[in-house]
Amino acid sequence: MGEEAVVAGDGHTGSSGRETAICCLECGRQWTDRRERWRVYAYDGHDSQEPETGAYCPSCATREFGDSGDADLHRDPSESQ
Image (cartoon, rainbow, N blue to C red):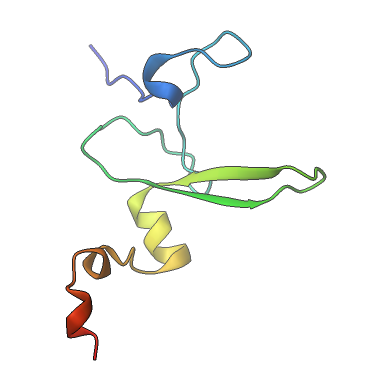
């Protein structure tokens, strides 16, 4: 058996009626390991007025956007002085 892709909506179907695999916008790799933390960013759509979203694997997200800043989420705010 091969790896199964993680699908958008945790297996629910989208408006097209099909499950959609989540793939990295940069390298095209599919998200197959639910334990792996990917990042999703919203950005202005190319030709539409609606914002779009893009998923990035950990390697590409770090290369494109830097450290995720998870350490800041768990830091005591009183220590920031």
